[in-house]
Image (cartoon, rainbow, N blue to C red; front, side, top):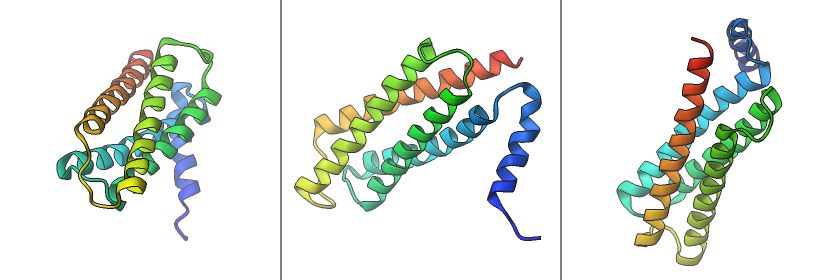
Length: 148
C-alpha cells in the first residue's frame, strides 16, 4: 500500500477529533507547528550567523506561509469568533512575523547575500520572534486547559 500524506493527516485528525476540535482547527494546529519549526530555524540561523542568506530566507518564508495558512484554518475551525484575546495576540504576532520576513528580503535585495544584518533589524527580529512564541504558547495553553 503506497504512503499517502493526505491519509496520514486525516487519520491523525480523526483520532484527535474525539476531543471535539473541528477538522480545520486540527489541521491548523499541525500546520502552526510546522510554521514554528521553519520560523525558528530561520530565526536561529540568522541570529547565530548575523547574516541573511538563502536558507534564512527560505525558512522565514515557509514560516510565514505556514502561519498564514494555520491562522486561516484555525479561524475557519473556531467557534469563538475572530476577535478574541488569543486571536488579536496571534494576528499581531503574524503581522510582526510578516514584517520581519519582509525586512529580511528587503535587506537581501538591497545589500546582497551574506551581508551582515544591522543591529536594529536584529533587535526587531528578536522582538517579533519572542512575540510570536508568546502567541504560540498562549494558544497551546488555551487548548490544553480547554481539554483538561
